[in-house]
Length: 478
Ligand SMILES: Nc1ncnc2c1ncn2[C@@H]1O[C@H](COP(=O)(O)OP(=O)(O)OP(=O)(O)O)[C@@H](O)[C@H]1O
Ligand SMILES: [Mg+2]
Image 1 (cartoon, helix red, strand yellow):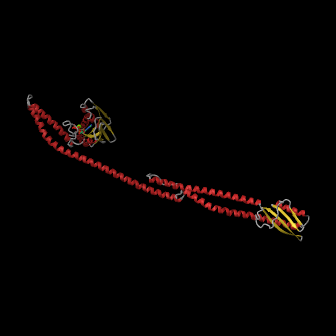
Image 2 (cartoon, rainbow, N blue to C red; image 1 turned 90 degrees about the vertical axis):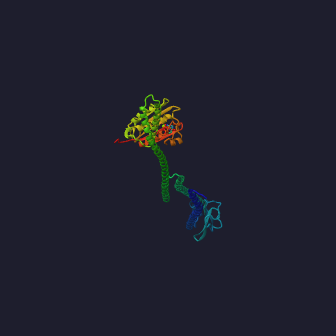
Image 3 (cartoon, rainbow, N blue to C red; image 1 turned 45 degrees about the vertical axis):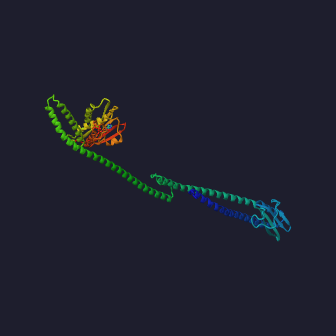
């Protein structure tokens, strides 16, 4: 059976009262009744005795009128309802009493004998040698009424007492139960994950205060352990994702590096081979008369060789072989504006070019020629993505606290994830044979690295593409 604390307290109080109160009531009513009866009997006996003494002194005397007066006094002042004096000569009876009453054969020895509600006494009197008898009866009813009233009052007092003790029990039951319930609520809250819930109760009961303090101590310890565990897990997860990031970054770099070194080596050899071809073809062309038919062939050879050198140059740039590069602190704004002048000449009429260059100073360490190539490569890719549809290319520049951001945006066809993952690979291209070398972004990558800058791409199929490059600001040009 499950019982709430207040219900239990009330049940105990009610049970105790139900058992004890009737016993108490009957014991007390016995005492009340006995004391009232004792008083009544004592009074009756004393009064009768005094009257008998008086009759002994005077009663012998005639006339009987004096005797009747004395008997009347007994009726008037002594709660009597019957008084009679009998001697050898006859009987004298007070006329104030109840005429119908008759002395029973036996006098009363205790209250409420015979059931006639009258207490009868018989007293022998010796007056002047004559034997006489005083018979007297007292009304028991007023005393009965007194007893009943006293019992009623006692009953009322006991009823009030039980009501008050019940109320007190109820009050304490509720007061005791409330803090326990608060603790219970808090404990349930904690169990369901609300660890911030404090286990504190407002109670003046020492045991409850101690219990709540101990429980709260336990909660804080648990919360601490829990937080520590969470922090450790989060830290591990973070470290793991960071590790994976670094790993893939490293693999990517290694691949680029390998291809770059390979391509660089080949390019170098090609460069060495191309140089005499170009030089000697140029020399041969100079020596040849203007009308020579070989001239056209040689011009073609020279054009091809120059295009080949262009490709080789791109490869060499990508391979970090920036032979002619001159790194210096320059204003990024100026350099980009200069590059845009060149680039805008290339932009087809279906494409609008919008520069959004913030005019604040942006000192960065870079090389003008490389920067120009960077803007050009990104810009060309941007308008190539708009070749079929036409659209807008935006080149922007803005300065943050310790970096300058250059972005090139187009609203062209964009790229899917598989393409985006490979765009920096040398020779990766989606263009047709002879249309693209797939080196543009590899070169951009190499240039960005050489500037100590960082690059990010945002793109989605059909949503256009934005390349962002973050240059570190050179605070002190010295
Ligand atoms: N702005 C862009 N919008 C959509 N696709 C792009 C964009 N920029 C680059 N790409 C994709 O990335 C590939 C690689 O670009 P990258 O510049 O390296 O080579 P390419 O443009 O194909 O050749 P090249 O630059 O030598 O002419 C492109 O073929 C193209 O698919
Ligand atoms: Mg390109």
